Image 1 (tube, rainbow, N blue to C red):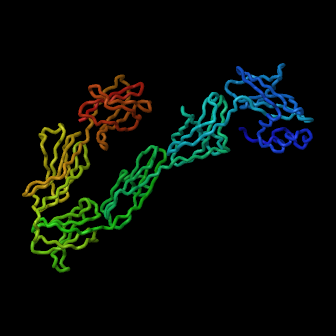
Image 2 (cartoon, rainbow, N blue to C red):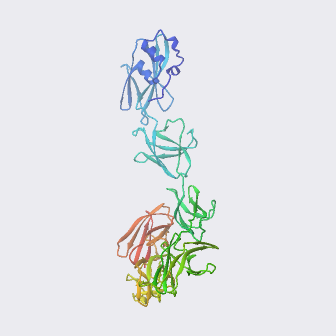
Length: 597
């Protein structure tokens, strides 16, 4: 549909009050109510018939009323302003040749109505070329996606979306053609920024734009970092940040010292310890992207009030007892314990004090060599600087102890596993008998065991209720089993059996590429993610290369695409042996040999 036009403005100097006596009632009604386009007005006065054969239009024009006379006919391609005269042939038809790159033509018909001559009517012929339209589909931090419609594919050489300098849309920055599905994806944008966009369609040397009065504004999504609380206790807070970078290129994210700092003090997860109860702490987190720079967020988190609930003591013999309390303290808290004293001791007498570990929400400790004829009272405590937090007093008596208690032993998951080491954690709480030896046993569960160990069980002794030790000189890429133990006069008690696998080590030796060209491939082990290796490809003009990892027997172990110039991880979780990393950019190749131990 063409724009609605008041035909008073389009018929040169035609004043309606001069034609009243010449117009029929129906003509007068149209004149008084010009709601249709000027092209429909031409159809009202002139009956037009046309056919296109072999690039030639054959046009018949017949007045519909006796008071209408055709004086002349002109035509032009609707994309330019040069009208040409059309002469009526002997057969009464008008003929003109079309151009191959444009399907739409305008007729200007000079008519007389009654006593008034040289009035102009306009008529469209051929395929009407519409202005393109679009539908907004999606947006991200760096992209927009649109579907472009209302085009003539048989005539259109290119269509898509364009970014304008300003909302008037009269200055174009960039054009983005559609893909095979008629969808445009505009990339490389800046997060949280508005862009002025229109649709376009190219017909030959003519560009049509969407018909909105101004270019429409669209805004990319913002980079929205956030902080969530993983856990909190009276003395610790663990928080985790989410970069919220979407599809923007992430340079770095993590916690910073202050709200405006560019110095990262940790990665996306951080634990603060040795805090004070009932106090609010502020965390600062930042995301640094290539497109958007720094985006920041803050979160205030309060520590909890200490909860220390005294539980019933467990006499393990007539001279020993286990003390217990439930608590909301962190397992790593070292400033808690129990105070104990004779039940009948005066208040002025200071209590005995023993530090004890927190194990899975329980403050646990044991006392030996207590008097079986004396009643004692005890309570849990937490000491922060010079401030004490207490649980309630409770009483214990060991003189009637009749149940035998084995040591309580637990094994926890290994931490900080590397290619050559790991940290073991466990727990050993004394029972009725004194513990004479405690610690961990560990052994390799794969054939890759050092000869010096003879595949046997290794033992390391550790003191204290909470046990921790770091193993070194382990074999890379090897699975180890381990368990905590505690030995008394009555025997040895073990905790649960756990396993961990050390990281494989990737050793690199470069081999010259088969064609001798200067493409460089660097390969090194990945200290962060077990079973992967870092690869960097440079010395090529290609944006990306194809790679394959092949065993020495010719079996393809993994394959994929690598972006040139960037360190990227590839799978290296293969059995021990020698492998070839083969890289090809389409014209050059390079091979790197590496060993998984």
